[in-house]
Length: 313
Image (tube, rainbow, N blue to C red; front, side):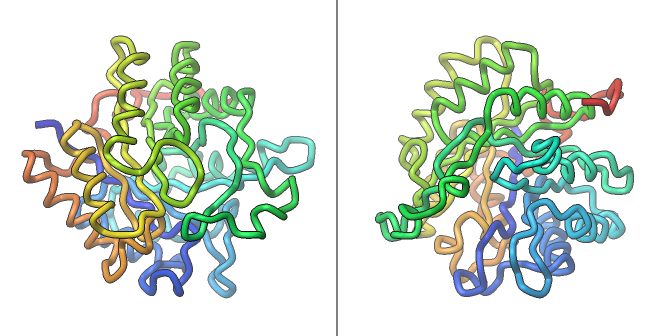
């Protein structure tokens, strides 16, 4: 049977009040990465956070590097990748401000980074609470209320990732994002795509976070993929119970896809569990279907390229 790639959303913006086990400092992050890798995770995504204030430091090359380097010096080969800031900033090159740290990490020979993030369309930054929109969302400044990912940005970053031979982790929050992604592939961009099908219980985007919602994405993917063999990950987030999370994990495993779990994505559904235990649950469910944990390079289309021609954008 096809092996399964398990990705972990390690911490995101989750606070200790939401989950006491969320890792925050570079040392805590590195230790947690080693734990989930030992349990079977093949890819880990994490947010750099200030070691003192715990504030998000999404573009802090040094904090990302500190955690990644500790993992590499332990001899662990697991793949890790950072986040990027959601807002287009001012300056001579706004994209450099958003993605400069990603490319710097990819160009660091000590880190062996093979995965880079990209969200495949713009979306409103609207998180519900108990199914309702908080007042602060409705009153947020316009510049902080939209996550902008216009097509010229997507094309430029995909070229930069292709030049480095990177796997592009393509976050798809809406069916329209999936159509955009497949059109960009048709245009010859993105040689190593990994489609991350996002299903959220708190963000007002995409299909409902249940097996039927996953099938909505897969119906569209099957209709438009042609003869391409594309790997996809089911990425649940904001779910309120472990039962809902397990239902989506089982659906993805049964449909031949890959799975992302983590305290950072689902602090409520992960209550009482560590990131390692979440991975162990996926490993157990996958084994019921004859599937074992995989490393990134084992999957067709995601193995490292022989030699990138250039690191130029």
